[in-house]
Image (cartoon, rainbow, N blue to C red; front, side, top):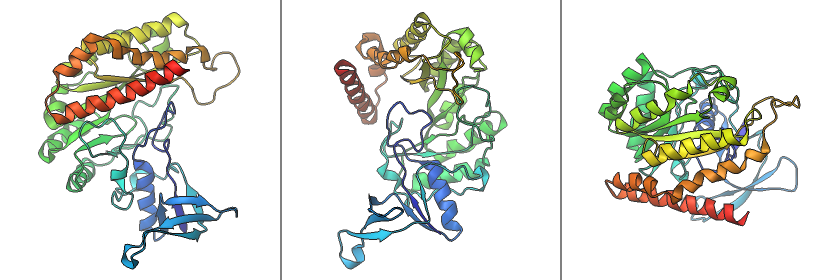
Amino acid sequence: MKILYLPHEYSQQRQREKKVNIYPVRMAMEAEWYRKQGNEVIWNPKVCRSGRIGLYQLKVCDTRLGQTGFWKHVEPDKVVTEPEGLPFLTLPRPDRVFTRAKEYSSGNYKHLPGTHIMSASGCWWGKCRFCVEKEKWEKRPVESVIGEIKECKDLGFREVFDDSGTFPIGRWLDDFCSRLKDVGMCFSCNMRLVDLDYSKLRKAGFRMLLVGVESINEPTLEKIQKGINAKEIEPILKKISEAGLSAHITCMFGYPFEKDEDSIRTLKFIWRMLRKGYAETAQASFYSPAGTTQNGYEISNESQRKYINKLYYIGFSPQYWFHRLKNIKDIDDIKYIWRGIKEGVKTLCHIKTN
């Protein structure tokens, strides 16, 4: 079977607020599975749709023949643009050379080049009403994940971000930390807001944790089944910061059961965490639960979409910049902050013109 993979800016994303050129690791794992089954896989070529349905024109380079590039017609048996959901534990590691992983420059990496991996599928909590992680939560063996991280290091990557819905905890995490320490790789991941010994993670090589706050309003957290109490959020973020880890926090606006004052309360809380240095960066998305209906309860509140962009007003806070600048240790820190400034300016300009 001939399979054409055409990943796009949303192929690895759970939220679609903006396009991001993130390495589509789940698709790359599935592509490698098909290759190992003997299928012909074509990964993300320069492509031009032919006038004939199902026929593609691909630009191919063959340096052995001294050619800079030529077009050839290909009629694939299947075109894949997003993960198909093949059984997670059957998937091999992606071939990052074949899938040209270093061409994907976006992501919450401080040290470039960086790449994504996935240690687990879905989310071990799996109860949040807005979540798109509907597949069974399964985690790979620790030795398999460590082997992939070593492989990434050998390929020249300097940071790895684990894009599992939520990173495993408990005994699995303890074993992982003890082995990661010997690899010497900078590591970040998605993590639920749970009370852990975060100093252990920092010593193992963790740099950043992406954690979902979603809302600071207790009734909202109960309705979306977040599984955390609002009063627990700030102490955990403080503990993460005091351990020497960076927190990237996410929140949501547009809940149909929230009023503007509720959204403003969450917005001000996120700003306060950034000003206090408990979080280093933040992002917001829009509440769009699966199975949205017209019953007056599940429909998102479009009038609150404006608060997503207001999050970036933190860029005008001297306190926020004090904490960002005081943590500069090397040139990678400076470059990381500069990339964030450019992204923030781009967003603020977009807000101003709209």
